[in-house]
Length: 64
Ligand SMILES: [Zn+2]
Image 1: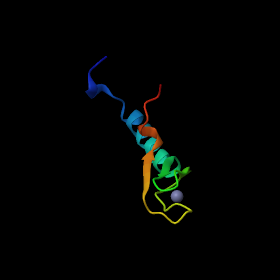
Image 2: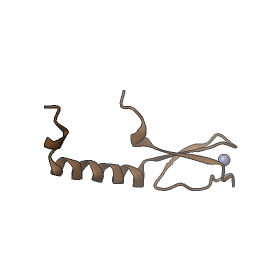
Image 3: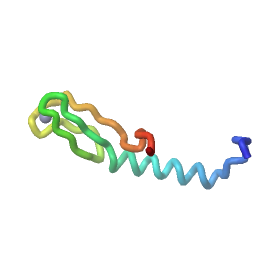
Image 4: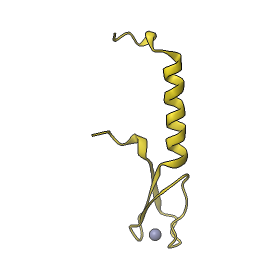
């Protein structure tokens, strides 16, 4: 069961689609100036005008 060569290509495609979807829609942005946090589809400057924004893809977070 641990043989990685036996992974179903269909499963990999599903994964890639999920990651792309997460990248598009679940980017957690955090402004280092005003401490605002929001979810966006892409990295963007904060509404306070700061460009010191950290962006983290939500799917990178461990799932409890
Ligand atoms: Zn800000």
